[in-house]
Image (cartoon, rainbow, N blue to C red; front, side, top):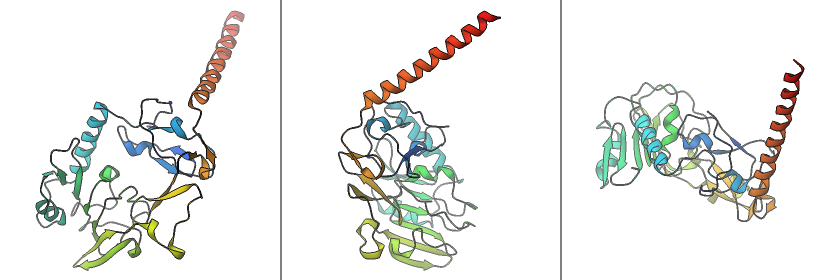
Length: 271
């Protein structure tokens, strides 16, 4: 499924990225299916023309989030394991409740996912629906035969503060992406995610002049254009002409349709 490319006017604005924007395919109802990702240095229209493209809102948004939550919380059978650090976190924090393998914030609408226990699930790779758990503070992946993880496996996990992985794996982003890295038995514990935008010297992430660095997960950053700049490397200033862009696109589509209709009609008369 590819997210729609219409120009919605009732959607909340999203910050513009420095790189070109493209829409990634993803499962239905998935907000990350339309996540703006950095691509090759191509030019693409920013601003309102790319506002919340493919993002559901209102009642449909709540329904989608509930369906996604059921998928990721039910990925492994049974409840949260008693010896999991997710169970310890959920028990030590008031106003939480367990659902499947998840620890949630009670009373929030939709319920915010705070912890996810995927330990001992025979995982050889990370599940695709893990992308729906970006609000997690605690994540347990121990006792799984996981192979090396891609660098962007935890893209968007800006709230993650405690991550347990099998001992054979390194902490995502490297040890420099965490304040504390310890080992316990057959697991490695990565604690207190660092803000990569606060690094100095050779470790600093350069962003264009009109952009600001923003964390995007362990060891990951995104460069967000400062208002009113937009486009590739945030080089253009001012608002994107939405009406002009949609008008030209609509006019070109209508002209092409009329041309094809006239051509087919002429061919039909000859027969």
